[in-house]
Length: 177
Image (cartoon, rainbow, N blue to C red; front, side):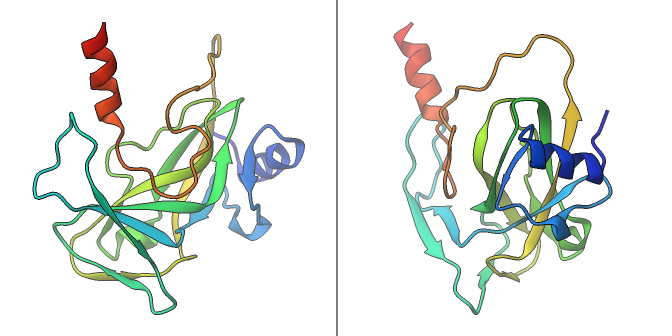
């Protein structure tokens, strides 16, 4: 079951959903619009290695925006810190942004119960595209969960700003066991 806009507002008001900052004009009929934060990361190595910590370059999006180029993966972040211990969040790109040729959250739209923080966005354009900090880039929907709940306690908890992959940490743990 998906929450309606009025229920998202009620849950944000009573604390079942945390959206900070919360703005009533970002509530849709069954989702909440999220905005692009001011920092982008790109990987700088010619080959990204899933078993290694990969170097990144941070760019601040200025008032003139920043042009995203095809063939590059950009890690952005939401302005809003979003999470819930009650509802399962799913983040998708807005259709208006998709119509500009920008893929948002390419493979990881589902959030864990108990995650709280800014969401890292995986951005990939099909053509050069200028983006701006603060632009509405995606929407989060909230779903009712069923069954026992084990809250998220993972490596991305309380994230602020874009977070590069920490897949390499999983490999260290697997090698240690």
